[in-house]
Image 1 (cartoon, chains in turn blue, green):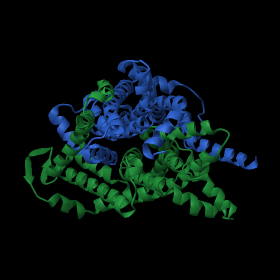
Image 2: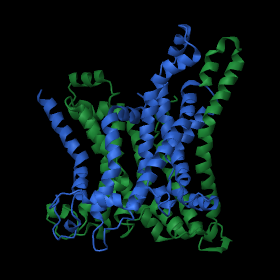
Image 3: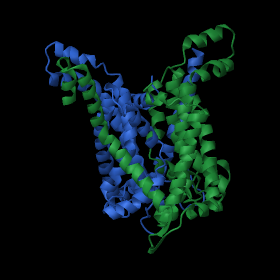
Image 4: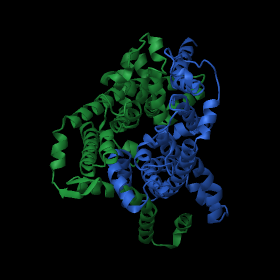
Length: 274
Length: 307
């Protein structure tokens, strides 16, 4: 009884650890810019307002970047999950030469230092005319999202009782019905969880975004944050950068709140087999 | 979709043809992933290998000439490389060591807590999911002179955290640790739940102290999970770029190897030299992975699940 209370106290400390910086971000995003130049900055704003958010959404630097971020992350996620689904199915169900190679390669790419590719890709993309385009970012995101997707999904696929498909066919279902009514519902949670993890990865990238873009044609929010200015040159950009940060954190918080269980399962099953 | 039909339409095909078909199907299904991964990593890396042997600046394309291994010699004899190497090494060792300890404590709390397990896991996933650049800005502004509360709270009035190498690295490490500890704690939790409770009970009955149970039963039984978490986080920390970029732009000797590769290639468009840095960065990663796999015998089948 008493020890269980101590574990709860420890849990509260961890929750504070996780959320305190977010409170600070919210506080900064609601501060009037004049709070930043003051000599003794405080934790909380002198007056709370949503003006910074209004200002941020009125700047095309941010709105364009937000559209780029959403579009590029979603497209990369969808393609990566579909391509990885085939490979994960093969790994989980089929016996073929090259399976080990595929898994080792995926592992190698997951550890690959991405900064080593920035130079050659920068040069190649300019030659191919895809520098500073959505495609130019989607290709590297897809590449580095694939290992993550392949592992996570093959770990999920291994747990599917595939015999149920045959059982359904024995009971008179057609092959398509067996797939549609039995396998898809069993596989969907794994595919969906993989999509969330892949989306986080693409949403988070900064290195490729800053190296392979130069205008707001493809610049994503993490890269755009580095270019933020205040409303005038005498004003601090800090509250605006934090307001923009709050906006890009909202999708993360929503996904975590709704899919907490699945994300934990996805992170742990893909990494260490249970 | 049709794969499933061919699979289950098995009976009338002979066994050897069936195995052949399975092999062919396996290759076809994994081909798209294989091709994308190889094309986008191996090819540019090979290209970097070639470029690294040339003196080649984008600002002076006509002056391109073959210089052999000269770029490597220049880099390896430059104190800047070794400075960045040490910075990266310090960040990696400090963050991974601290994260391993805090991550283990978090994992243990997540295992033992009864009330509030769901909210705890939800909260811990937020730093994991947050954009690294956002984390970097949050911590930078917390320590900055004009916006931060840290100096007020600690009574340091006008101490400039980003004006000195070690205090700047402290803030960089703090942001990195805050964001990535949840990930490591979840990997450790997966290992922790596999420790057989009967063994812990038996040790307790035999009079082992809590510390002995931890050191002799729990940790050895989750060695594989610990090594995998270590390998992943070490290689991830070694690539650190976002935090130093946002906080210091590499000022005051806080530049990391990834940052150097970025700066040479993209900012200075010195592609010959930059490519040599890229190749060296790649080699350091291979060396670290090799030490883990051969030296520490990290069992990667645990990761791949193909054992």
